Length: 45
Image (cartoon, rainbow, N blue to C red; front, side, top):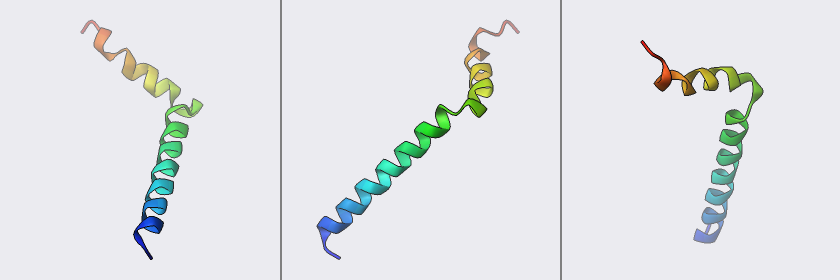
């Protein structure tokens, strides 16, 4: 395995990780939890 193949694999792995994180962040299942976390600085307690 030469250096070019390793670079291609690293790029593909990074891209797949990015897509996975983006899907997780924009999932409707997590939106309520993220909305609650976004309001924490404005909580008056």
